[in-house]
Length: 618
Ligand code: ADP
Ligand code: ASP
Ligand code: MG
Image 1: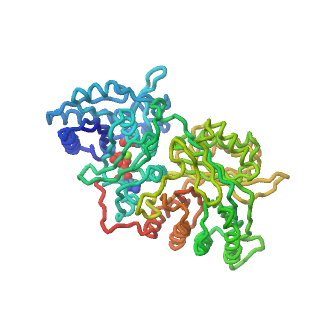
Image 2: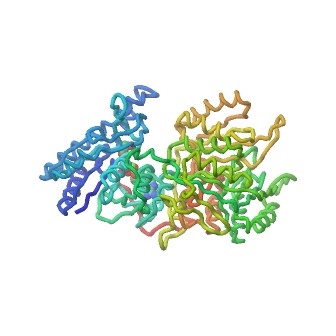
Image 3: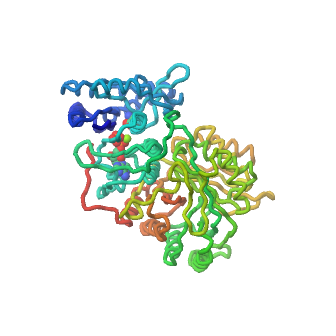
């Protein structure tokens, strides 16, 4: 007999008939000898409807009252599903987040779970009842016992957290698609179903726009080793398993806010090649990385900053032994990247930097916590370390620094994030990184027989901010991202320009990053004020962007993946505005109206399509 947590999303409980069908499935699972806790979402598009009502009354509704309002949606479903189960003769009881004791931070509309009381749940389960719990909601522990919500899509997180707290055998997420597909089937009907995907890959995909799972649910599954499967509510197909290594016992106290950083890693075996002032037009990155891949040069980080005038800088890192080859390729291709009609002498200048090191912090608890990256930058600034390049992913922030400062940087970060020496990763020539740590720090090995790219995601809800001419000295990134963190604005894809310009005797660089579109205007207003006070340049906001990304653990050490992605975009005449990579993902910012076309082109280029077409039920 197993203890199973099942979660049913909005479409799956969208009508009385569907609730009855869910009750049938739950009943069958109980009759097969299992104990079940069911977590449900609000019916259909109820939550969207409630949001609309609120915005008809106030353009900027009070967050406490929003939680009061939105939490009602799930309360309807739990009562109806319990009734449906009781009609089948199955004892059941509905419970709100507060009644269960899902204790969260007192942070309305984006609360993180601190712990889950299991006493009442267990008592009802032991009495033979199915417990039907309202997803997406909790109760704050301090002061007034306020109703909180976890953020849109948060019922997945409720379910996995309950599974972790109850040490359930597994957690099933029932939804309107047969599992996790290579991309959103609403955008590419031939998207293919996967049998399994690693937590690391899913964490990236979910954070990069694949809304089939809430990223925080994947984070909890990864941290607590909860076996997780995504399945269709309409069929008995097995769905997709999200696999994770069995972690060492981790406390269930401060469930979602315990240590955000698990390790500090470094790699002193890196060199950087930058091409400055290449034309800002489709096809440039494709040509450069196409040639690099033909020469079998494996690049690590790739960064393309926001354009200045009509030119871009593209930089990449390689391991030192292949630097000569990488430099030769860049130098050979540079003339072809100059504008053919009107070449200027300073176009496509190749810049090589030998003595660099990559220093990273890694951990699954960074998602949506802007303070973590800010703390890294502040720590480096306090240690007098200047940051040359920044590359971010959901589970890692990497900074390229001067190699001579690497030891100092690592020691400071280890102290700041309370990482024991034994948990530290390092990487020497050709070795793979990372020594005994409580969690796999490197992306878990690709699953057997998997293609290097597993999935493609599109995020149409981002905006890009650029700050021109920030002084190039320690502490600037810390200041900037510290301010954003104070305003609770999460930042993604941070990119510093390679180009350094001396203005009023001070070397300066541009820095660009993406934020959620809803935070764009606020961030711009706040930063414009600060920029005026501190003598920074202009703050530029572009809300019409799309971020398209590929994810796969198998792309590590495989030259040519980036080139293929850039080539697919070039063929469609899609200009790449920014590029950022981590070990297992590559993201490009493109114009918003080209987002869907970009996704489709990339999905096709990696031959991810299957022969079957999906029709997603309404
Ligand atoms: P639920 O209401 O069940 O939580 P969601 O709408 O939150 O469902 O998530 C399911 C939807 O996620 C699918 O209908 C699909 O459009 C979308 N989706 C995006 N990317 C993917 C992907 N890679 N695989 C499967 N579904 C995806
Ligand atoms: N009902 C909430 C939403 O629509 C939570 C969820 O469904 O996961 O965002
Ligand atoms: Mg969902």
